[in-house]
Length: 104
Image (cartoon, rainbow, N blue to C red; front, side):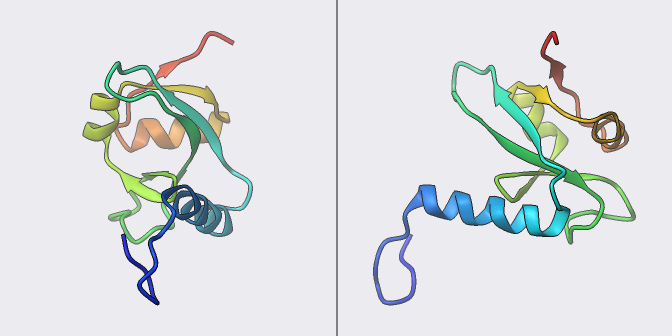
């Protein structure tokens, strides 16, 4: 992707910027997720909130790398929760997100 000045945007830096924006919005309430899908190998930070424009009528929305992700998308990616609070798990349930929990 090109950014101002015609230079290419570094996708890693762009991902970090989105995570930083999510942390600013949510404070330190950051979950740790990973995919178990053979199509995508990823481990990273995520957050669940009702204070995002993608949240409709108080329904929680999941932010992965700062971008909103719906329940169907998380089913396809087969995410596993590595770290989350009880409150975050409750918000995920309210938002119809389904995850596997890593054995703690």
